[in-house]
Length: 148
Image (tube, rainbow, N blue to C red; front, side, top):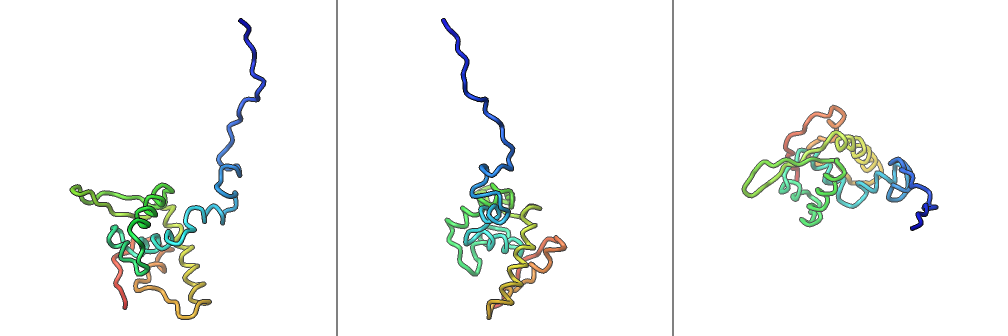
């Protein structure tokens, strides 16, 4: 029996930062948009910053996020380690959601969007609780008080 050697080159293990490992490109804007660039993710993060921590509170967002989309976004944000959940009730299991340090870092992004929107889109305003203004201090935010 004859033994032959493979002529293929050994596979090189590539570091995570190479362009082929990114969804679109290594561009920081593109990579950030891959995580939170859909219609709902930043709104969920906004509501978490405002102190809405349960599924029901998040579902009551003024934008009316559909339940199936909310569940999907919470799962995606958790997989991206932007949020973490913890059970507060066992039967049935119910969770509270909170931002990780990585997720809290998006507070500055949201604050920039608020400032831009108020400056360039007539009629826009911040909602009730000025929680986004306390993002820099990274203090937990209490329940919001709705203004109608």
